[in-house]
Length: 139
Image 1 (cartoon, rainbow, N blue to C red):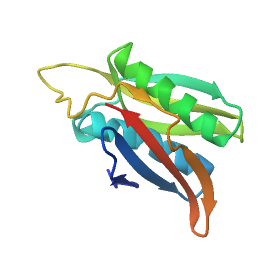
Image 2 (cartoon, rainbow, N blue to C red):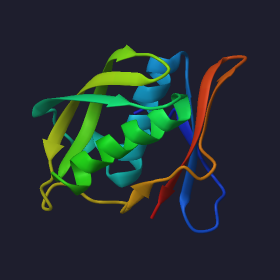
Image 3 (cartoon, one colour):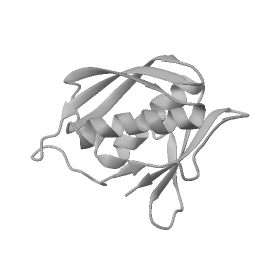
């Protein structure tokens, strides 16, 4: 996976900066970054496609809600995401098709346990070269 994110300094949690050419690309890259931090995406096989639809009050709230929904696939259903296709996106809603692989401890290594997506320092904004988001994950 081409990493469209960078890790930023943070005292106790994981903070990343994600980039994308447009909002759809940004949200796709943010979701893939989340699972790149959790596991090794190259070891995942697309076995099941799940439809995800999320709303938010503004782009920052939408990003948090979207990433929380993706994180729930892991923490609540033991599914690891390896591909994301954004179907529709606006300032307050996003829908996506995500390919998942069920966690198998003998095959998948969990690199980092992420407990939650936080509102701390959340930022989603347009830049001169596209879009960027800063997200903090509670570990």
